[in-house]
Image (tube, rainbow, N blue to C red; front, side):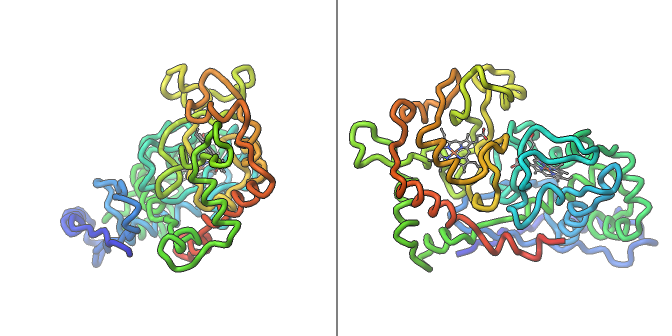
Length: 358
Ligand code: HEC
Ligand code: HEC
């Protein structure tokens, strides 16, 4: 059952912006409210109140997302590293920027951003999407362009200045408007129609293996009664997006092997060392490789990490410590079942939705 998120303020916004619009340039200016729909079990999204989604703004954001002129040499768009069929992530372990240099982290998938409440990037260093969206443009390891150049390239392009009028009422291009449009588009990329969602809605049943995997995923670890013990994934990957918004260390390395301090670089707290924002597991079958450094190529490798590879360290999450000494004790069948369950989180509609495509 979908609930419609209605935006009333839009009318006021349109009136205010219409007054500001240059009447010689704009015959009719009427930004159309974008109807953002979402399932009830997701809880309220956090849509920016000062950047109301409009069809014209979202369209401008999509044009910019696929625009290679945002990069220094015109070879790279946001979509070069955030590929729709790969869940808007990158198949490469580390993404290559315009100068041929590799970044230090795996590109993150982009969907359900309106439920991301604790920040963006693996270390949460950007609190809003608009702030986030200007960083890859300027990052020397990514698009390596100045905002001034982006503004002058877009200003010289009538297709863009026309769309800026439709979206914001004036043809003036500036980096704030670029970031607001990108924020609007990224907010509209949503995914909630996976096989698992259809199962929850009673529209289909899971296979025997998927069902066993589901049960393992949601059952807690029990070191005293191995027969009752599960894989304990939902302890952390919880809620409708299979993430709890926290920065955690899931035991990838021991202290002496830490190479990326993650959240600590933002918070300056030693207890955040090597902790990273927990990713959503939706569409995870399409977002390989895995973890902040893309160290695992397959879901089988990920499951084996949790089964037998979790390392003790000064900052490892207390939630996972009980599983370290004996491991999860999963059988080969258990591991297959768990992977089969993770595959039910794929949402073909999202992966192929033409609204998000160029
Ligand atoms: C060269 C590859 C590359 C390009 C180009 C690129 N990104 Fe990214 N993106 C990444 C990587 C790598 C990360 C993770 C970086 C980190 O956490 O330090 C990321 C993270 C993100 C995130 C964070 C998602 C989350 O869940 O927190 C968003 C949103 C995003 N990028 C949007 C964009 C936009 C918008 C553009 C274009 C203006 C863009 N990216 C261009 C590689 C790229
Ligand atoms: C203690 C909390 C915790 C538990 C328990 C946990 N995870 Fe995670 N998971 C995380 C964190 C944190 C990350 C990101 C770590 C990083 O990249 O450094 C992560 C990353 C992942 C990823 C990679 C996603 C991506 O896009 O790169 C997968 C897949 C995953 N977990 C699946 C599972 C499964 C399956 C289980 C149960 C066997 C599980 N997790 C148990 C916290 C946890």
